[in-house]
Amino acid sequence: MSKQGRQTELFGGHVLNLDSGEQEERSLFISGGRLMSSLDDAKEWDRVDCHGLFLIPGLVDSHVHFSQTGLPDGRPDSLDLTRFYPFDQVVHELQTTGPQRFFPTYLGSGVTSVMDVGGFPWTFDMARASVNNPNSPNIAVTGPLLSTIEFKRLNPGQECSFLYVPDEDSARARVRYLVGSPEHGGLGSPMVKIWFIPRAGAFEQQSRVVQAATEEAKALGARVCVHATGRAEALRALMAGCDYLVHSVEDAPLGRDFIQRCLRQHTILCPTLTVMEGYTRLTEVLSTGTAPVLDDPNHLVDAITRARAARLPELVDEGARARMTPARLEATQARTAKGLRQASQNLLALVSAGVPVCAGTDAGNPLTLHGVSIHRELEAMQAAGLSPLAVLRAATRNGALAMGRPGELGDLRPGAAADVVALRADPIQEGVRACRQVEWVVRAGVRKTIGQYQAQVMHTDQTLRPLLLA
Ligand SMILES: [Zn+2]
Image 1 (tube, protein in one colour):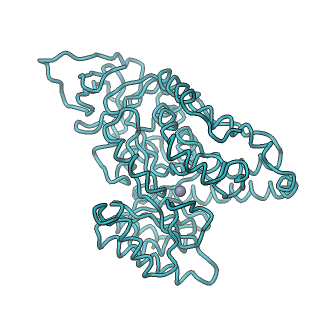
Image 2: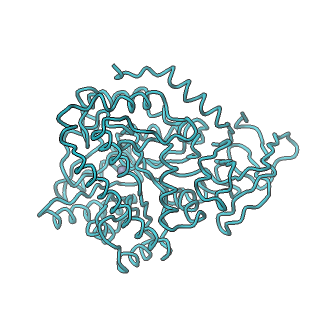
Image 3: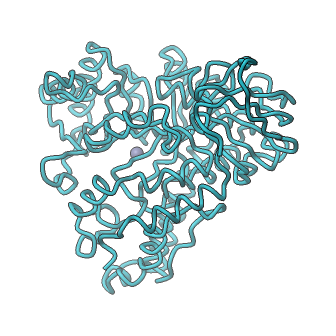
């Protein structure tokens, strides 16, 4: 393991140039957690032989939620398991023993930066602690999200992750709370997240709420991101001036006006293609009574998550299972596949037009596991018709743009954070599937092999008592 203070030279590897797509055999120099154009030759440095390895910038997952575990284990969402895992206890567990258990999974999967777009106020502490921290991905957070619909059950106790905004005044007041400085009782958020879920008969009124929240955030110097999966609400979010759309439109082709508006406003879009597959796999668990197979190529999913996933079938009551008939399962699968097809076509149209897209998983949602889900998401983006280089740009440089840290993250140029992933396979020639073959990862200048991340996951398992695994 290299130490943060020491100088390091990574030599002999194929270094991806994000502009040209070429993989240049050159050295990367690291000092003080940053990439340098050269090293101080008055001091010694470690030399790491990278022959046969493909070096890419650390990946950015631009859409995660640390207030969700990746399992239906408390958040009464698609499957209500609150009688086994009371939601307030799950949240308490996350807050005290921490989403830190997911960190080695992220880093070992090559994800060195994440953006939490909607969570409890304590996620701000995680963001602060992540700065130049080799044991944590870089974390950007929005804090609690503004919701256009009421969702009372998701707000245990005082700490809220969903703030319902029924009208324009409440939207403006909530934005002032989110963006305001901590000295004045605010959370100091640099970006406001709005959850735009259309309600029948209320669309115009909801759109005005989104507009008011966006205007207030902009007036206070904050950026705005919006959850919108339908074309109508995504377009309204754009018209309001949103900077970042965290889902693809799944119900219709985007159309020229939509794309032109994205280009004019420099809006970034995160397609988040595969999150519904996780929900669909959960439906399969309900229907078939078999535990889900986890996509975990490097054995980095922690024991708590694995154990809870394995127990899912036995926690499902007979009633829920009986309701999930084969016909309903088939309909769910078909709906998910159709949404993915439309979202994929829209993604290709955006990229072809030059709209910056980033890569995000919505990790934390049921069976979209923290860290490891990045692989399937990148592969789905490539399957949509993007070149491997376009996917890698989305998952690095554009992710840094979404996080508001361009040039500093997701880049291998001097001055950027020393976050580097070494792959055993060529991601340009063989496609982004190569990102599964991680050899080692440098985060904030500290290099760890996949074996060391696996050991860290094991260690975390031993020190964390799975509180609710009764
Ligand atoms: Zn989300």
